[in-house]
Length: 120
Image (cartoon, rainbow, N blue to C red; front, side, top):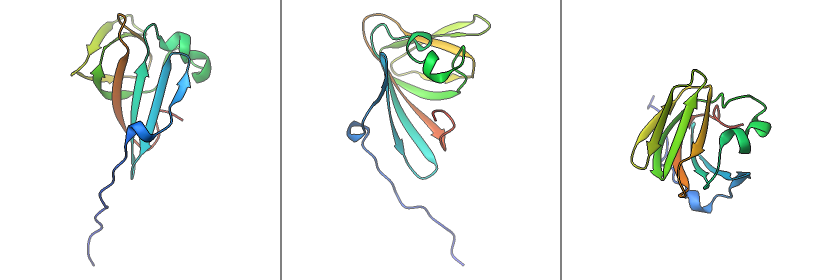
């Protein structure tokens, strides 16, 4: 018996319609077992302002592993620790955080997740 080798897959994020909540937009390409999501925090965007009501939680309770491709994102954890992530940096955010755009430039990041555990 031969072993299973999945086929190559390709998706163009620019061709996927954005899901917009306030000043935050996301578009997700679903590959075989992996979701790739481009998230854009527009100028002035903040998770607790734009997505809190939609998510139904006090803080974002989803983990994120992402590459920041533009701008800067500030993140504050429930314990008040804070960090900024800028273009070219990779971030790992555990559950329990708020996040917002720093400055006048939109922040865009691309995250990779197994299945659809990050966004439902």
